[in-house]
Length: 365
Ligand code: DAH
Image (cartoon, rainbow, N blue to C red; front, side):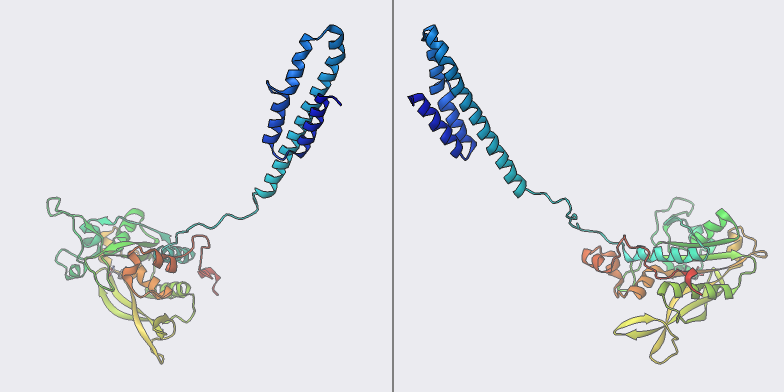
């Protein structure tokens, strides 16, 4: 075997054992690089006699072809092995579900307002809204509270600066002005609820300067107190999701209703919590004042352009925050508006499993 054949055999052997592309490259440079032994061998062809060249050229070309293809093969084999290793180790499992990121919650007040809209929709009520920045006339005068009316004192609110001629806007103290706006806009008959924010300059454990009410208004021919009682009973049964709701209607006074009634609901104490249900006169039970209501005062109908000789109606107003506390067991109203994320995570609702009422009004016998 010539020296060159020995070099070739040696290179081919080392190629077989080469474990990474750098080793293969080193062998290639040794043989085929500018200074490589095979390149040098090629160059010797130039100085050969024609007969010698005819004899040697094919052998040298063959050696060159052999080592070049062995290099290519080894490179390809190593690349394939590397790819296989990557496929084994870098596996991306696309069947894994995405991890659950942080989620917000629906505030109990929003939840309760949705529940109210749902219940009253079953009873044929539409949802009406009105401005929170209200004028004196809609908030007081048209509700039969003249400027000197003592009832205005209970509604001490936030006033905007005087606009001249004694006119100043205010933050509405109740949702009742929506009664006036609805009647003036749509006339009779009418069946609406009006949920929303209201404001009073009050602040302690059970009062916040902003809170929520829902107003109800029904105007039609021949409406009487019996319709009011049935509506409230049906609403409260659906809302608290129990049939043993017992109401007590007490005579009261509101300027915008005549007669006026305050509605109490029976409840019992259960492990420090007020649980609505049963008669307030039963053993271990009591009455709790829940809402104000009554037959709409004829003067209010007149203010709103409805003929009181043709149409009658009832109205009610109830605190939404209070309803939420009673149904879902919170005891500090101020926490409703602190925006504490822990509280919201605990008392809030998932936006993805609405509605939460187990049975609508229509589902009841
Ligand atoms: N607007 C009253 C308040 O905020 C609540 C109320 C009482 C509303 C009687 C009514 C009603 O519609 O008939 O104190």
